[in-house]
Image 1 (spheres, one colour):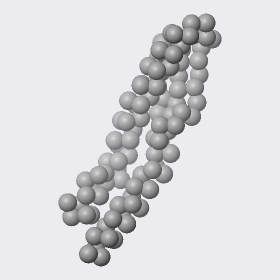
Image 2 (image 1 turned 90 degrees about the horizontal axis):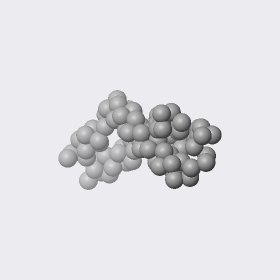
Image 3 (image 1 turned 45 degrees about the vertical axis):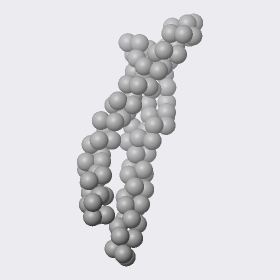
Length: 100
């Protein structure tokens, strides 16, 4: 019983450690032939965005291109995070600690 409680505490600690590690990871996405670039951290918080002045006159194109850049950043971020989780032991290690 106590070993399960300890395992749950360990998992909580590992999850917190992963969340902190996600703050340190960032990835960039771009769209519109580089006219929009955005950088986000592992918690998917947008850290910065650059928008070419050319896109400022067409609202629909601007919105579409921002969404494409965001999707690109998320894809790149997922690759980064997969590597980080692998380095940290990942979900499998957590489950093993619970005896699953």
